Image 1 (tube, helix red, strand yellow):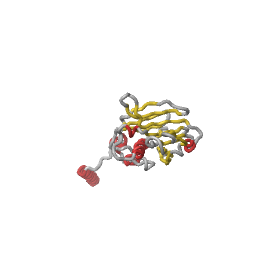
Image 2 (cartoon, one colour):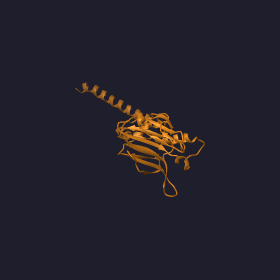
Image 3 (tube, rainbow, N blue to C red):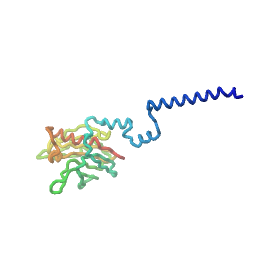
Image 4 (tube, one colour):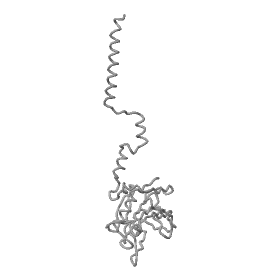
Length: 235
């Protein structure tokens, strides 16, 4: 009876020794521990996980290559978010904003800028939200007039350079007047019965933000592109 069980004991001891050797080898080479806690930490800190979405954000890829992201080395940007009209965008942290009076079918008008010595706001960029029903983007632009300096006034599309851009993946029109103060660009987006006008002002140039030897129109576009690259619809 005991002679028959002896080989079984020997085999069991052999398996035990093999298991001990495997554990010792794993410890020696410090094999990675794919523990549950590590997977949870990765989920909680999603920006550390090499997902396709995080890679896209890290490389700054945009729908429109003409629109560049804000300088990643400058974190001094904050977010303006408007739940009522369904949008958000980033702007320089030192800016404050104030609401303007609205006209006709406008629903929201905001200026962003810095305080001047008299306590007023030197506007540098702004946004206007307009209620528009049963109208196309081109029809909207055709209905607008541009009032510039001197005798230069007339239909917007005749008095300006117009180009196509994308804002959060939606086709938009950028309009730069041929006359007037500094050829300040405006971008027009139409979505779900609302028109969004995003613009920079000559205040960006006039109040000391600019440094360098860049053409004024090129500089305006740089500032507007930085804002547009962060613009998102949230509804």
